[in-house]
Length: 308
Image (cartoon, rainbow, N blue to C red):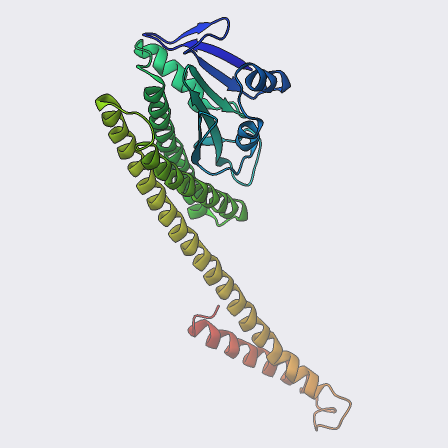
C-alpha cells in the first residue's frame, strides 16, 4: 500500500505522486514495487535489502539516491519467542523524490503521521523529515522499554508467589528483546553520526539532531539498565530454584536413611539363619521395638540437624 503526502507547510494526503511529495509505502505488494522501480527509478536491490528483517542500520549513495536503513522497534502480534524486536525502515531520497518503505505496519509510523498532522507545520525539507523519523524511532524505543519494564515487574511478582517455568521463560524472551534493542540503538546512533556529515543540514537540523542524540542516549542507557536488572533477576531466581531443589533432595535423602534403619534391622534378623530369638515369645516384638526406636532416633537426629 502506498500513500502520497504533501509535506509543504502541512502534512496532507494527495491522490497521486507529485515532485517533492513524500511517498509512504507500507507492506508493499508487486504493484508497489513495480511503481517504485519503473516510475521513480529505484534500484531493485534497495527494496530487497529493506525486505531483509536482519538488515543492519546503514546508508549508501548510489545513482544519485541516498539510501538509508533505520532499525525501528516492532511488537509482534502473534505469540513469539521475542515479542519485542526491531525491523528495518527504508528511507530513499533524491532531488524531488522522498520515499519510506517498510514491510511491516508499525505503530511508530502511524503515530509519526498523527503527530506531524497535529503539529500542522509539515517539514522544511527532506532532511528535516529524515531526522524527525530518527527522533520518532528513539521516542518509540523508550515507549517499548517502559512496556518491557512493566512486564519484568509483572513476572517478578508472579515469581515471588511461586517459581514457575513459564515466568522464567518470559523473562528470557524479554532478555532477547533487550539484546535486539541494544544492538539496533547502537547501530542507529552510528548511522546518525555518519549522516550528520553527509546530508546538508542547517541550524534547525543541528538542534533536531541534538534532540535525537539525547533521546537515543537515554534509550541506550535504559536498555542497558533493564538488561542488567533482568540478568540479575534471572540469576537470583535461578539460585532460588537450585536452593529449593537442594532442600528437597536433602529431605528425600534424610527420609531414605530413616527408612533404611528399620529395613536393615528387619532384613538382618529376618534371614533364614539361627540368631537366638527364633523361639523367643518376645522376638518379633523386640525387633519391632528396636526398629521403631532406632527409626525415631534417626528422625530426631535429622530434625535436630535441620535436614527435615
